[in-house]
Image (cartoon, rainbow, N blue to C red; front, side, top):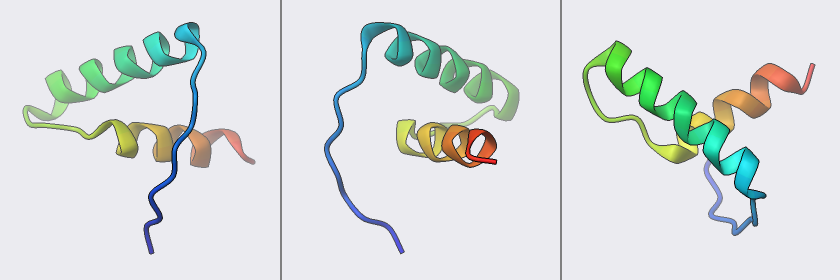
Length: 47
């Protein structure tokens, strides 16, 4: 289940997440949502 929320990111975090998003777009050859990138990174780093 998805939930819409609003967060405020520091500039350095936004830049890093956008870089990850750009790499995924190049790798997969199609669009990758910013929400997906954020969720993937949270899942990877919450352990």
